[in-house]
Amino acid sequence: MSGWQDTDFGRIPQSWDLMTVADIKGTDKRAIAMGPFGSNIKAENFVARGVPVIKGTNFNFAKYVSGEFVFLTDDKADELLGSNCHAGDLVFTHRGTIGQVCLIPKNGFERYVISQSGMKLTVNPALIDNEFLFYFFKSEYGQFQILKYESQVGVPSLSNPLTSLKEIKVHVPPPPEQKAIATMLSSLDDKIDLLHRQNQTLEAMAETLFRQWFIEATPQPSPQPSPSGRGGENEACVIADLVDFNPLRSLSKGSVAPYLEMSSVNNATFNPDTWYDRPFSSGTKFINGDTLIARITPCLENGKTAFVTFLDQDQVGWGSTEFIVMRPRSGLHPFFAYVLARNQDFRDFAEGCLAGSSGRQRVETSHLKNYPFCLPSHQAIAKFNSMSEAVMPKLHLNFMQIRTLEKLRDNLLPKLMSGEVRVEV
Image 1 (cartoon, rainbow, N blue to C red):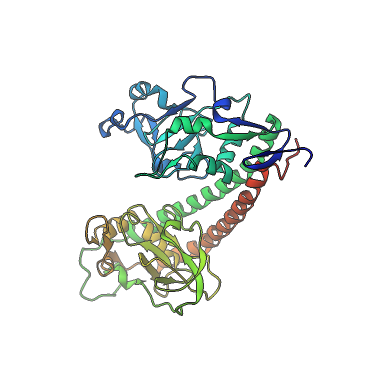
Image 2 (cartoon, rainbow, N blue to C red):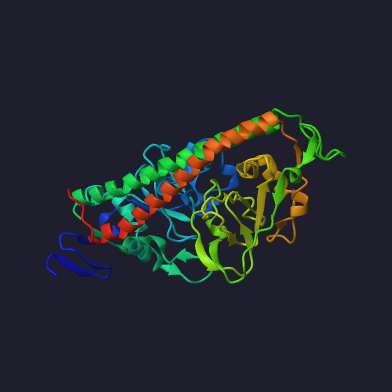
């Protein structure tokens, strides 16, 4: 076909070049570097503030490294100068979860240090746009180029990480087209990020109000519930007086229904990443408005919790047997159970209910039901229900918009990276 050239990726426009990462890296001798050996960063090196260290958990974001960091002093970061990263650098994992890639944000810290399981790449901006290269590595072909060097022995890792990275082939459009492609994809990611941030703010607001109305504004309950059980407002009770655990849901064996894996449950927000239809066999059943909390370690400690909104009306979904289902009783908005499940005091109590052999401990639901609480006032319940009626539809709408934009981005990505869809410049 005129105007096209054949590569191991397939046909790409004739005007695009095929280069290696070694061709497009920066001119500095530290343009490609690995994190320091583990012995060079020890627990005693960490301080409250300073230069952040990029660990594996800091890759769990769509585009930029983020999350909770540990810090080194400036002097320690200077000792590890070869592993320093700056705005615009790309960072990769070469050990553990292979294929992860992120950018260092422009509005983040002045510098970062990549950990021993990572490596960094500084590009030559005259040859390659760093955001275009990021999206290249997020594409199916870019992932293939990374994963083809994965070692199949022991812990997942890249064979000769720096050499492997340098050898990766990249199809490179002219600079104006690179920029146009990156801008189009970034505009989608920026909108997705904005919606995520809105939801994080709404959830944080709901958690703050929950604490004010149900914990700080009421007397603290004693460890034991009062003999009278449910009595007047602010009387001590247990959470099982307000919330049902693992309520009965019906689903016929073999019927096809939405299935939610534990790995798809988010650590920080209510919405799961994905779900799919699957014939029901054996698992935890749930409906819209149910809260799911992980009962197994380390998923519980990692914060895996979901509020179900993705099912059709009257539809029953199912998932891992390692979920606990929570549903407030009549009079309380279903969102109450989710905000409760995000409350740190409740989570600490749940972790105290873990039992079993080391590494496979599970929450004993019978103990979790005895979480001490105070019967909330009618006024507090009314305020919380009103807030939930306003917040929950916005959370769900943002969630659905995020899924639509992610689908659009994921459909565009391979087409833009192959030249099948061209961007006018």
